[in-house]
Amino acid sequence: MKHLSIAPVILSILFAACQNVSEAPPSDAPPPPAKTETEAEWVTLFDGTDLNHFNMAGEAQWNIIDDYVEADGYKRSYLVTKESYSDFQLKVEFWPSLDANSGVYIRCQNPEEIKAESGYEINIYDTNENPDNRTGAIIHFTPPMTVIEAGGQWNTYEITAEGSHIVVRLNGTLVANLEDASYASGPIALQNNGGLIRFRNVQVKTL
Image (cartoon, rainbow, N blue to C red; front, side, top):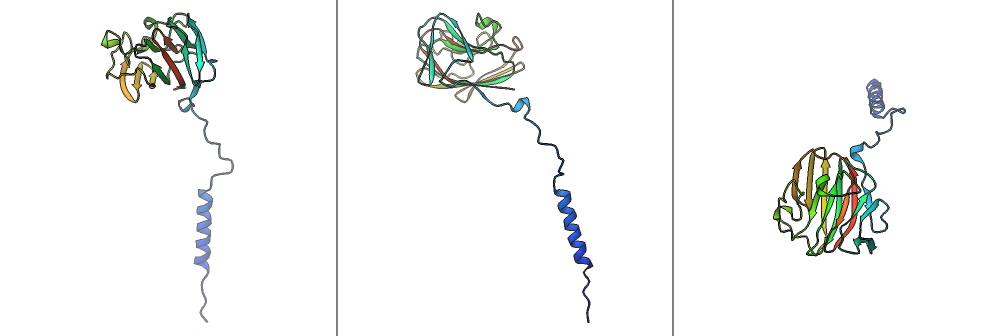
């Protein structure tokens, strides 16, 4: 009578078991690492319901209408974030009238006195008599790389400030790419300075 050897079968079973054990995670394995600062989530600064993240500066009153905010007059005024930001990404939707004079300021040095001489102003001003300072320009630093008419429609600014590098996209198109280390940190401000300007869906993410 022919006897079958079971040794190879047993060895195969033991080998497979060892493989499964080696591939299984140890029971005392550490949890996955927490999100790093660079993986921070977007924070909504304005979603159409309140202005709790901002202080008002200037003479006009800002009012929420539907899902956007606008000033009630053409006097120079600002919405200034209560927090300061150094390295970040910013998304802002804005609707300017054809004659609007406005802007988005970043790294403002004095939250009580917002101006282009003490921070970076990304302009919103299609009809500026100086084409180097029209919509998409960073005032005093760089003209817009592309001419885009923003008046009379909703637009989106995507602004990235990381160290000395500032990149601005308007409706997905690159309009400014600046290397400058003049200002490292400060609040963000939204300006009303003539014509009609509306803002909505303001979000920021720290880098």
